[in-house]
Length: 235
Ligand code: NAD
Ligand code: APR
Image 1 (tube, rainbow, N blue to C red):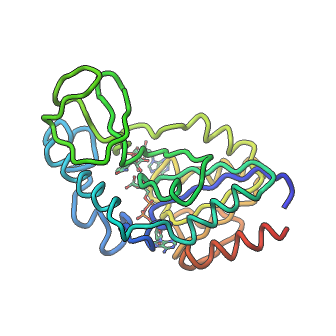
Image 2 (cartoon, protein in one colour):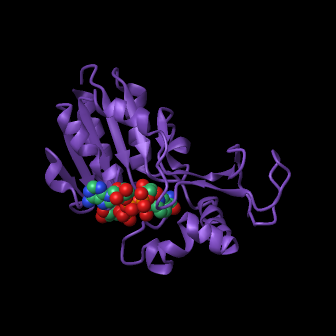
Image 3 (cartoon, rainbow, N blue to C red):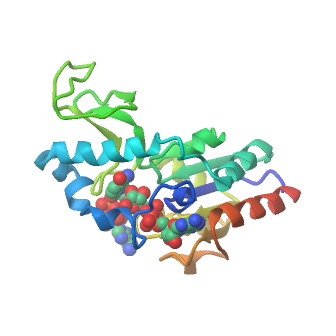
């Protein structure tokens, strides 16, 4: 076990068994919507009502009582609680299931569905409702400025300095439930390899960057991840 420094990357696959659709599966989110229509700054300028509605639907879905963390989320919270070294969890997901499972040292590189941001002041506030372009922001008191605090295609992901600094000094890198389609997240394994870390991909099937990993464990996250974490903590 040791005082190893661990960096973990999660993607939509870790929340799939909680009932949240992934992006690129056969019934994935991008099958119903063109990314260009709902998840880009241009889309928001062109049709803010559609973009607000897209994220309102996902927010209400996330708040449904049947959406709960699954054993994979809890396994990562247990690792953080019991591992003597540092554990940084970086998620591409915008849901709050890692927090609800008990993870604390957590960075959302694509933002959070339960936050809204003012496009003028940058102020971020917790939000559980349904938004619209007519909403006034508390900071400027104007309509049309509020947007989901989510990183869209073409925008820079968040917390990148902290993420690269952790990757540069990690001993173990776990990638869980991500297809490796989208950069910069898909390139994290190369940074971890350059740091001399042991790199493990845990996914339903090989990702687009599977060849960069030292170790591969395929299966459903709620099954393979608790087993992996239990073995790891035994040392
Ligand atoms: P992208 O997939 O288009 O690519 C990100 C960057 O990596 C781009 O600069 C691209 O040139 C580069 N890149 C792409 N493929 C590469 C490769 N094979 N090798 C090296 N570099 C490569 O993502 P984006 O347009 O920059 O989107 C920014 C972020 O917004 C992404 O991380 C995306 O996941 C996120 N996003 C979030 C949501 C959401 O709803 N949360 C929706 C869409 C996008
Ligand atoms: N257990 C483990 N892995 C799973 C499971 C599961 N139960 N179900 C699906 N997966 C895997 C799929 O095999 C796939 O490789 O999770 C991955 C999900 O891939 P995507 O749908 O592409 O989601 P993700 O990799 O998170 O997308 C990255 O792209 O659209 C943007 O911002 C969006 O954050 C997202 C980013």
